Length: 70
Image (cartoon, rainbow, N blue to C red; front, side):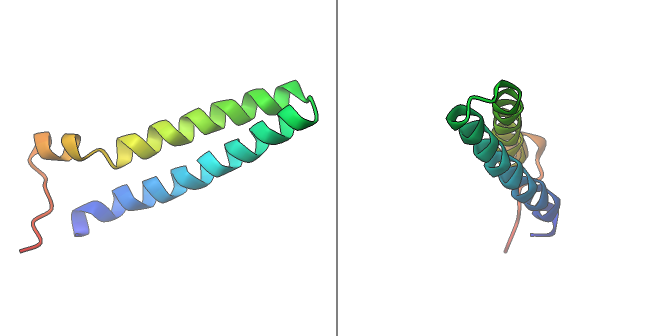
């Protein structure tokens, strides 16, 4: 489990970036604020990409650093 802790931390932070981007995207759409919408969409995309990269099990498997809990 020790090998996965930094990845979990990065994934948790990326979820908060994702949610913040979601908020700014909806706020920009509702109140027709184009810069807020653009920055919200970029934060949303960035958060999703980092989340997927951080928790990708295939990357961990190919590098030989699988978590051995037994």
